[in-house]
Length: 114
Length: 116
Image (tube, chains in turn orange, green):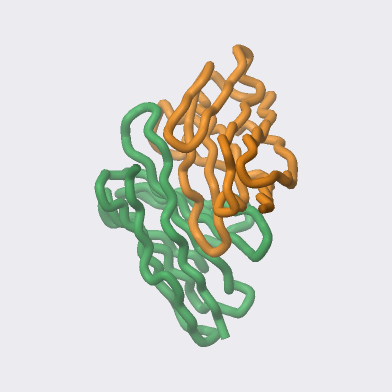
């Protein structure tokens, strides 16, 4: 299972764009990259998932370079409510079963200030 | 996105009793579900993989006799903490994903267990 490395914490201000980068040098061919957001005492909430290039949804964008050894989560115009821990995970999403278990790293605590 | 529920959302029990936590995938079928534990200010730790119709696969260091997992159907997995002790107090979270390649894994809201 690929290990991920991301900054422990980041600070930002309301209205700014925030980019959180994650390294996953040992990513495997079948691995997808998934980002989750977690608030205290809640389960992780799915943000975005991708395999290569760029993925965008209504809340974020995910940039994945050609070698797939890293990825960047981009949050446009953050607000105070975006203060949370963000986890980057890689895992095999092609097949069912235990091959797609996700191992959490430390995550990035994003603190958004007014 | 898909919805995963957990019940109860919190439970307080006396030391030595057993507690059962349910995890349901509400709008999709999941042959595989996962159970995590999270202590305060720490990341999620995978405890076990729950497989429908077969035995669960436990991560190293997790006592299978203490944390009993039953995957009774394609939408329900249960975690029973047997003979709970104060050190078992934690936040327990389950997750599930659909069956198609590329399907996302969704997490339940978590269950706060406090053992007195």
